[in-house]
Image (cartoon, rainbow over the protein chains, first blue to last red):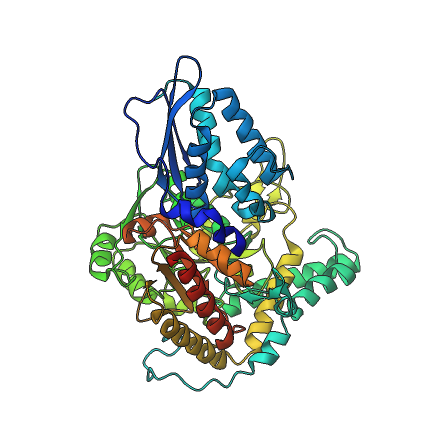
Amino acid sequence: MNELYQSVIIEHYRSPRNFRTIDGPTHHADGRNPLCGDEVSVELVVADDGTIADVAFQGTGCAVSRASASMMTVALRDQSTEQARELFARFHALLVDGGSTDRLGKLAAFEGLAAFPMRIKCATMVWHVMKAALDGGIQA
Amino acid sequence: MTIAAVGEPSTVQPTTLDVDALRAEFPILAGSSRGKPLIYLDSAATTQKPQAVLDALSHFYASANANIHRGVYELSERATVAYDGARVRVAQFIGASNDSEVVFVRGTTEAINLVARSFPAITPGCTVVVSEMEHHANIVPWQLAGARTVPIPVTDSGELDMVAAEKLIGERPAMLAVVHVSNALGTVNPIAELCRMARAVDVPVLVDGAQAVGHFSVDVAALGCDFYCYSAHKLYGPTGIGVLWAKAPHLAQMPPWQGGGDMIDTVSFERTTFAPAPGKFEAGTPHIAGVIGMVAAIDWLERQDRDALHAHEADLLAHGTELLASIPGLRLVGTAADKIGVLTFTLSGVHPHDLASLLDADGICVRAGHHCTQPLHRRLGLPATTRASLAPYNTRAELDALAGSLNHAAELFAR
């Protein structure tokens, strides 16, 4: 766990990327972890060709959840919504099903979290919220 | 800390407790967590269990296991005698005069739900006065019963605003439901005084004693309450078993809330009549082993020198408070004059969940979050806190280790 905190996670926690609101998002969803009270909202702008032109988040949470959200927004930019869903599936598999770090890029930093089942939700919640936003269509 | 020392000098007595011998009675404390020696600082969530309780559970299943109140054979007789005898033991433990006022339930939560569901004065639209420091278990059951929950405010130091309390009680709510000791702050509330206020206007009082019974002697008659609830697992006993104590006239006018075997007088398709209290509230086969284990825990606790336990806990609280206060950026939450061994705090720049994970890496078990007291955290303006809660089996060295890990976490996040 110490190794996890010494990685890029603290850096993203302190200086989260895309920690802002978007004027006129096409997709939006909120999530809340009732166990810890953490809240996160995700906004996206999906272009007509299905590319994620912009993605941002807001909310309160621990370093793991905020770093995960920050790194997710970086990873999703300019990806198709299909690619976003695939990336979530691989990220989820890494943490929950012993999946590999292949094609996860910087998100591989979360690999060590797989050994701490009580904290996995901290990292995955924002991805679930992103998926809910995509599934829900225009909700903003 | 002034537990069991009301009116006595506030100086902490030298600890006479043999902590090593006490720890040796708890097998789990010799174990490890994340490859480090276990440092268990979450006794407000659940206490660890002494060997005497583990032995009682094992002995019951190995030599006396049978259902109660049914068989005429010797095993069933042993189980029945032990189960019914437990009621007498519990009544004695909490100062109740009548063992038929003791209802066995799953825990404090179920006890409160039972009263909220069954007590005739709790009707949709009624008012139940609670406090801002209540555990969700003493808020939600009343709301489910249709009551409006109105809180007694909590001061910045984590004590009840007694002027506001008197005013709210004076408005004659259907119930005053209040926590004896706050699980999040450690505050010991002035229950006897609240009961005097309530009695003056005929308001019944329910006390959530979950955090109290393990820390000091409780006497329901001296407190003057109407209902008292606790869970065995915060009292060195097993999970899944607890007690609702209620004055006999209240139990008599409360209908059963669950139906089944063992709670009836006669059953027919036309008309069923119920057993008298407490039987009518104990439908189905109860947690017999749990009851046996709870009695073993009570017996164990009362064999200890409780003054020495108190003195040691007070010493730990004083030592821990001093240590934590010396950590830059650390803010203690809950500084009531009368409190048990609970150290709740925030550390600037470090979220409680990250802190709990970093402490966990050092083998230290603490609780992070809102501790099932969201309204209290909202009142304090804190989304979450970290809580180290103490029991007499803890040591000064463990608190020193906690302080060391906290300093390390603060450095990691400040880098």
